[in-house]
Amino acid sequence: MTSTSNIQLTEELKDKIRYALKEVVSQKHPEPNKKLLKDMHGRITLACPYCGDSYKDDTAKRGNIFWDTLQYHCYNCNHHTNLYTFLKDHDIKMSNSDDSFLVIDYIQQNKIQVNPESVLKHQGLEEIHNLAIDIDDFKKHFKAKPIVPGDWIWFQLKARLLHNRVDDFLYSEKEHRLWILNFSTDNKIIGAQTRRMKGYGQRYLTYDLPKIYEEMGKPLDMTNDELNNLTKISTLFGIMQLNFQRPITMFEGPLDAKFMTNSLALATAGRSTDDFDEIPTVRYMFDNDVTGKKKMAEKLKKGRPVFMWSKFLKENKLDTYNIKDLNDLILKCFELKINAHKKIDQYFTSSQLDLWYV
Image 1 (cartoon, rainbow, N blue to C red):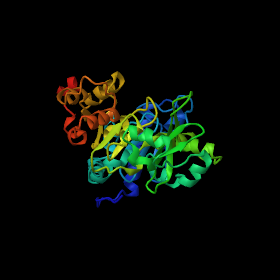
Image 2 (image 1 turned 90 degrees about the vertical axis):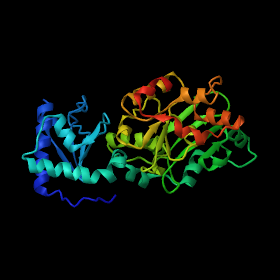
Image 3 (image 1 turned 120 degrees about the vertical axis):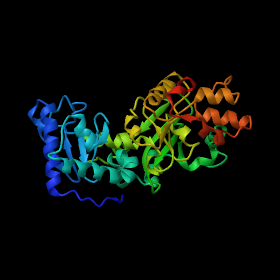
Image 4 (image 1 turned 120 degrees about the horizontal axis):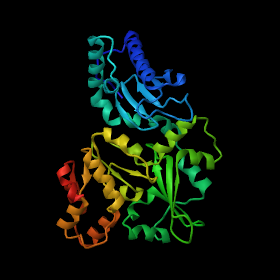
């Protein structure tokens, strides 16, 4: 990522920033260990003053200030902001007005390129790319095979209008499980979710990258925080293929995301999406049920763009059908010969006045 800034963070200015950060943690935390900062490669770690960080381990430092962008991110509570706002939130000022100006100017000049990706960049995309599993090794270990036209499972995908995306799936015939794959940029595997297609048992199983490594007998030499971070990122389906300059649509399920380009899907129930609120191109299209609508109402109250399910279904005379997600919507529109993709973009709103239509 190339910076457009001509401002250099001198060691003198870095020392002043460290001093300001020490003031924050000293005022916020009574525990001696939590008052300490730790210099890491490209960043400073500290006990998060927003959430208090770990209550079990007073040496944990999940808060991070990144030197290249002067952005703050906590891997415990997912709070994300820039250094200036961070210091302002805790009533701390730089040593003089010139220092404050340099910090603000540095953030602003880097923000154009950094802000859309900063949350995710600092959560370990590069590490995940390097750890991605070769697809042939994955298929061999999990005894999962490619899907070919004419197979029973191919007809199941065709019934959901997913038969043109067979390369995104594998199938374990013995266990009757469909593997929904999460790819890196070079077509390697960073995560997966399986769906049982026949028989009894848990319907969905999610495989984050640490779990895949464990299943394959490849232990990862990482801290718990690093492993938790890998889990969070590798269960975000589509994360490695995003174009941050275009609208990013977030869904609850990986199958829905197959129907829209530049999309992102959650694979774990209850995962917080607050860290994505800092990315201006993200919009939300959660399921058309009580839980999904509640989540979107919360997003809309923050000024984040959400899909107006009620308005879309009513205006397109679809409100009498049982449509709970995008896959259902695409199927019904296909049946009724409605060009859903052309219309969907028109029904996102960030106005709280549209809360009734969500």
